[in-house]
Length: 378
Image 1 (cartoon, rainbow, N blue to C red):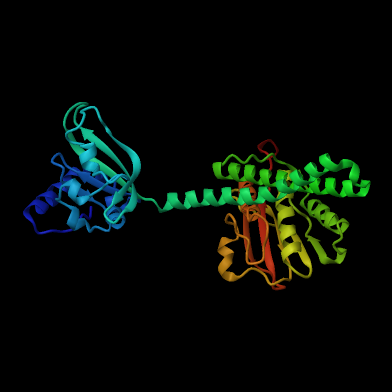
Image 2 (cartoon, helix red, strand yellow):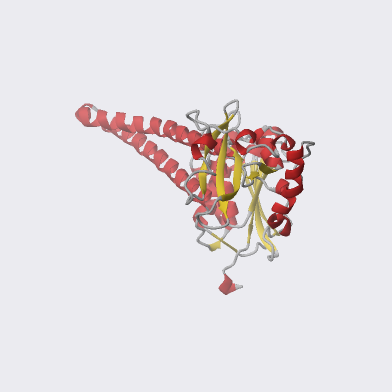
């Protein structure tokens, strides 16, 4: 265990005994400096006998300066109301039935916030405290999560406000002045209400998908899927909506392995990737469906789908953020959640998805799915 160096008699005594006192970690082959969280251990007298590398990093205090000092001086913590934490909790002189302190936000000198939890170790249930073990964690990961949640709420509120305002406005107008409008005017307003209601429905579906992806509860209901035919249906829908047929090039390499996947979720992936190519790309949108090696260990074959366009593509520095929440690019609209959901769906199938630059210069998305036949057909 690396605990730093010091020349004071107290520190030398602490260094001489701390290795023996950390025998349990040594028996497991664990060095405290290898732990991801900060670890601070004080003995029965309140003097620090262990101050690992993570604790030194989080507190900006060298281990040599902390070892041998009293816990209160080595780790001068205050709560959010400015009260000194060790005086408030009194681990050595407080109630003999206490076993520790739950994790909470505390402040280091300079108002730097960290997460702290403590455990009081006794040789018998109500005996004196022999060790105080303190765990320290940086708050940055939690802050990133909180910021992500705040961004999600703000995005949802913004995206819902526009269609709901439209729905409310048109329905209120129709109810108040129904007789004043012609049938064509009524039809136009109702079509707008219907489109905005569909937009709200899609947004709610996206939120539910994100919740399931984040919690690992996204269900995949596998059925046989003809991936080439599925792509063909999406192309036909775009052509029917007014896109020129020659804008799409579908190439299916046969024979394809039998693919078992969730057809609705695969449609969702294809819809998102094709919509991105049509709306944000240029030139011909090429879709290649090919057999390939399976991304999952133990399976030989899989199916790969590549969607590429001839636009300006995605900047190299942005490619590592494409599948994160709220990524839109410089000219992209929408919620920025679509590709995050696409990645979650593909990975729920045991597949992989990548982004790169297409031969024509545009964006190229490629996802690969394992065959994933049900066990009873294997």
